[in-house]
Image (cartoon, rainbow, N blue to C red; front, side, top):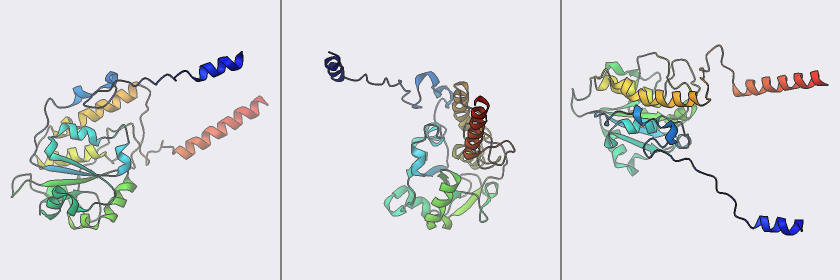
Length: 248
């Protein structure tokens, strides 16, 4: 009888997991929608932005580039994914690589302060800003695997401020997310005092929702209180061993 009952139960269809309804715009569950943090309409810029995104970033549910795209006009923010980029296969990228006023937003010994550049539209055609999206090691790999990037004028931010992307560990206390870097760069190129606030507000809202639902604030890797995942795991194992020894 038990065998027959088990056989009958095995034929029943398994309950399908319920999928939370998501917002069509921010693609987050409705109860943590952040659309009220976006500008009422896309921000108009003279500068075009091209994001070269490492493939691993696409699967991150808390990435910043989708927030950036929602804030800017669609034709002013292009995202290309990959590790190596062939400009001959993309007309927009090809045109940008040939233009004299295309700038690579990437720190380094060759980089100049972006504040030494003229604002957008002052001289000639509007500029194009190319940014690399990924972890620091991924971004460096993309830079070295795409030698054409080294031929661009390389710029870096001349500001030092703490990142508001507090739910992700940053390499240093002055490291910023891709969205924040682009926001500060556009603030200068577009001569807009509201640019940073308008672009960072959705990121701030995203982080606050995560913190309200159990996430914790991350400190940078150069912070005195930073503990790596491996150190944290080691501490947990040591604590478990201590508890086991006390109960024996």
